Length: 104
Image 1 (cartoon, rainbow, N blue to C red):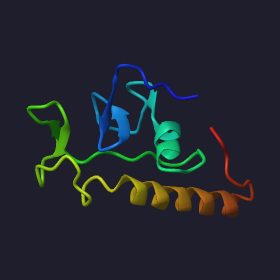
Image 2 (image 1 turned 45 degrees about the horizontal axis):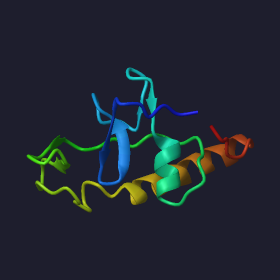
Image 3 (image 1 turned 30 degrees about the vertical axis):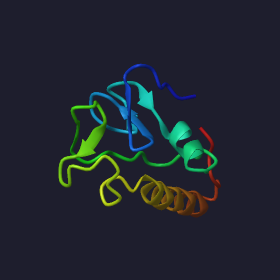
């Protein structure tokens, strides 16, 4: 079960801990993988969490990447591509161990 309390922020449709901009953060007891997987059309699996690049809120409070000053930057905020990569790695690791894919 994940915790998406007030300590989370949304960056281009994905949830991260507010303090560290991590999808999975043990310091904040935050895990947004289930919500992010669901938003992007995936069934949740135990995979590595994504991290947002250097970002900050603009004058409207919407997070933008520091590199391109964009709130919808496909280079920095390519969440679906990153999630797909981590899901593939998790599945391969599960097949090697012979245990399959674990749900949360």
